[in-house]
Amino acid sequence: MRVLHVAAEVFPLVKTGGLADVVGALPQALARQGADVRLVLPGYPAIADAVLHQKTIVELGPLFGAGRIALRLGTMPHSQVPAYVVDAPWLYRRGGGPYQAADGSEWPDNLQRFALLGWMAAHLAGGELDASWQPELLHAHDWHAAMACAYLAAHPANAVRSVFTVHNLAYQGLFPSHEFARLGLPHSFMQSHGVEYHGQLSFMKAGLKYASHITTVSPTYAREIATHEFGCGLDGVIRSRGGEVSGILNGVDGTVWDPAGDSGLAARYSAADLAGKLRNKAALRQEMGLDEAKPSAPLFGVVSRLTAQKGLDLVLAALPALLRQGAQLVVQGSGDPVLEAAFSAAAHANPGQVALRAAYDEALAHRVIAGSDVILVPSRFEPCGLTQLYGLRYGTLPLVRRVGGLADTVVDADEAALREGRATGFAFDAATPAALEAAIERAVRAHAQPESWRRLMRTAMAQDFSWNGSAAGYVALYRRLLGRRE
Image (cartoon, rainbow, N blue to C red; front, top):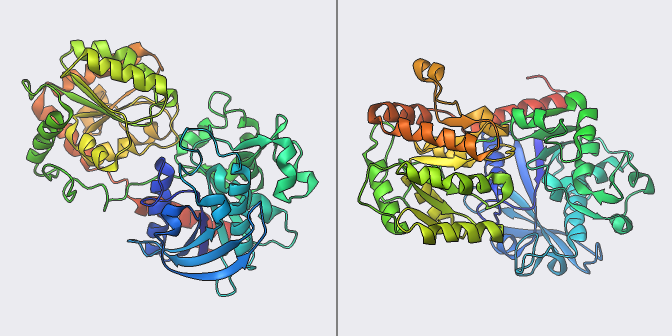
């Protein structure tokens, strides 16, 4: 089957979060299962300059404020997945990030930038732009690509089915209602049953309303977003779609995240030979300036955007209890300036026990996860979460709040799970410092029993969260939407 994926970022070219990892890995896994998959991506410099062997398919303009637009087809470096690049220098060729300027402010023309991405994807799917290839199904990822579903729905002769995947409902692509005219959609779409949302227009709502099917990146999150607590104001829209909403768990790219083959580590290791794990712990302590006098002390790691969503304020509140138990903490990430400042102050107040690297660094993320004993993911909500999956792969036991994909992937080390050999980490329920402190205390007690801890590590590393299972779920969904038998 022919499937077109449309997204605003892709690993390893442009990444701000887990979305890029998914878009980088899922098409490869689908191709291995026999699908004919292509990507369509915005022509940021990091993408337009890296996609290989580009050929111009069509030139257009003016559209969405850009005077000249070229659609080019090439192949992704490393994976060789075919990729269309929407080369619109006026909209995409600039410094800063994909969504924000260097000072953190949203690009003022984001509506045009991502409307163009959706428009190009829809017209590719409709067979207008590439005479040699037309997809049977369009798969749009998150709000940046959601308008593709609306443009398909606006065409009366459209027969292409669409899937819209919600990676994080909290980011919705909201714009002033007076900008609706820029989209070129029928006026009827700017209604409460369309893209109108409390006097604004919502790209996220466009995907939720007009896609043939909605997926989220874990089964639990699919259920959660239909509730008031997790629905971010769109729970009514999601409930109205009924059985057309489902969850398919994200996977892990085993070629990128593999402690036995990770060349960036101080020592490689596997479940059969865990000696390298201790060498990575020692190397991380040395790199981050942590006290090395007690090598057996548990080391907790955080690799995350520093936001309240990720529960990092809970980590700060629980930090005194963590340190009282003789544990150490290393934090890698950036985000909320208040949280950054608070972790920086904690590091200065506790030299040798707390370390902060306030930047995103992919290579360092591997070293932190490999060198830590426990990876903290205490999120208030978590659509899927990849960090805990990386932790499982590396024998770094996740300590998570029992929400979303965290609930689907980590088995708490309670008495029953330990007795049955199913435990892979530690989980808590209430988003409170006290609940997190109790989970930390359980982890520290467990770490003090080396043989039991090694069994937990090996059970964690034996879990299979590869993309093959996720891709099989998407292939089954695609077949059903296209009316094909298994």
